[in-house]
Amino acid sequence: MEFVKIDVDGTVATLLLTRSAKLNALTPQMIAEIGAAISRIEDIPDIRVIVLSGEGRAFCVGADVNIWGSLSPEDVRRSWILHGHRVFDRIETCRLPVVAAIHGMAFGGGLELALSADIRVIDAEALVALPETSIGTVPGWGGTQRLSRLIGLPRAKLMALTGRRIDAATATSWGLATDIAKPGQALAKAKDVAREIASMAPVSTQIAKSILNGGVGIGSDATFELLAGMAAAGTEDGREGIRALKEKRAPQFNGR
Image 1: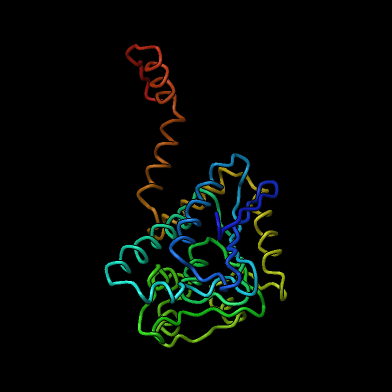
Image 2 (image 1 turned 120 degrees about the vertical axis):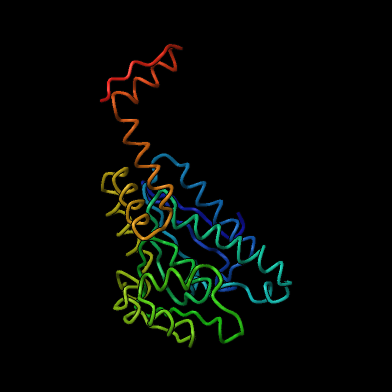
């Protein structure tokens, strides 16, 4: 991958955006690489938590305007909006907990990327914003919905309608981030949070994430079927059904 790097340290994998010369501004290729990286990390057996961050002076300043500004409305719909939603939804419903480390700037699509994580740690000097209305567009990658769930509708409207830049202390007091890190320490602090999560029972943390998401309507269909399937598989009838299938005989269910 050209603009995304994966670092593995024990049970924690760090996914880093590496287009630092452009402040990690997102391109279609980067979005695809982020999605591929999430899938790759999920396939590593020992990984329990993902940390999401960016190299250089910024977490991510959003979509690269030089690319999407020249696209037709149909290309914007297909290549940007729908593709971005698929990848950001993929992060939000990822089996593993995801901790975002925000530093520098997280603007527009960059903030929306951070919002798709489960937990956000923010550098004390960082700024977050949804500046889309200042350039004649609107948040396009789930920011309005995720942000309003986190900080409430009036504050989300304030950010989306004014494009105002919000400092780390305000963002944390509003519930956008859970922890403020000392300047330059957001990634280190996010890794501390990740290791704390990783020290817990991994299946339990994954189920807890699914339940919490499902309770607010995020991936609720999959959550219900996941829990029901696990419950059924743990019954005597469930085990008998599998044995009978393997032994090519009729199952003898006992209701337990």
